[in-house]
Length: 41
Image (cartoon, rainbow, N blue to C red; front, side):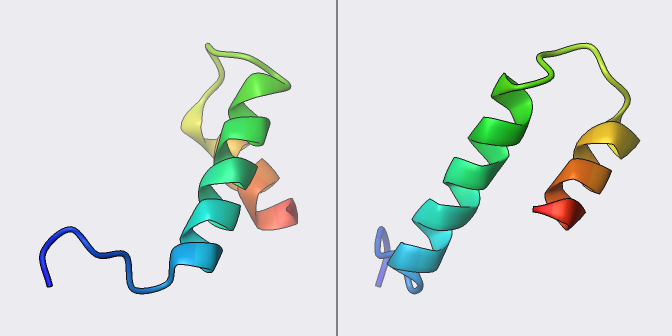
C-alpha cells in the first residue's frame, strides 16, 4: 500500500488550502497566525 493516498480528494483540498494560506500573507509570521487562518478556512 506504499505510495497510495487513502483520502486523495480530501488531501488535495487540504494541501490547496494550506498553500493558499501561506501565499496570501506570505512568509515570516508566527505559527499561530497560520494556525488561526487554517482553522478559519
